[in-house]
Image (cartoon, rainbow, N blue to C red):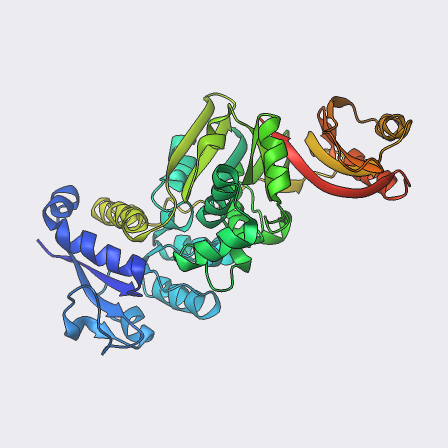
Length: 428
């Protein structure tokens, strides 16, 4: 049996996991695809570097083009990261008829449609399951499992770092800054955590999920993103008192032919399954018109969970090679993408207001809501030690984002409202 030869771009944490699985599961892989799978060449930054896995030194190279242009290699696995130069490597590999497996969410979020179009033109496969939610097979599920359904909503925890931080804040009462430092010390967060904590990483993943789920080309600029850096312990404790947990959620919704995609800290009812997803775990909730509610849960990162998704994609590519059907599964968008306006985006909202503690203030606040056509579901006023001011917590009935913006604008000009401390979307 002629072996399938693989070129591996990158031998970091995930790349090491790929080598472990491919070399350790040879019998299983051979039985599944009918040929041995061999990692023939590996791109590294430094060939002389000591590694925690034994690799034949003759397979190592510091020149990416050597791997890309190697005529013996059938499949390229890209786990090096990066966007610009990495895109060039992948396009060149496709030009040469090589199939691609990648874990690069940034690349696929920004240039996925171009890469998939190139793959289709060249009769090549591009698989990227590991780019979202690590070991959870959510991309394959959206493409294949929901192929006969119409998805109306995708909602998920797709960033383990922020979920770890919010879990610690909720369960231990810790401050945001303290938990962020702990996450950095444990390696969950980068030295510069901006991409995680400001929602940028999650926004890229929601770009991919919404493009696949709605069969429309959603670009990163179409995703409204807000992170967790402004979430306070006070917010989390008030949420718990009201029966909610605070999670950074990616939310993509479709109604008729209009869609909205956002990432934002959200108060979700404790009875909702996503509310109980803690630590670095990920979960994606999908609602289809036919199937109803489904949820997928698992490890969102890590050496072996992510590598498992990559090797599963590799197996799919090799099976397609055996059947001669490579390049036929590229999911190019065919629906015209129309974004919802603020008038069409609707949800419940949580507001925490710092107001003057005197008669008539609540009536003024209620009047603002009435004037803006927003209905109030509940009001709570915690006891206040300062008799000159107090806090008021309001949860609205479902209202449009445009109407809520009018409410917030009115509060800015209302003397009785000293500060709008927090505003969150409410789900579940």
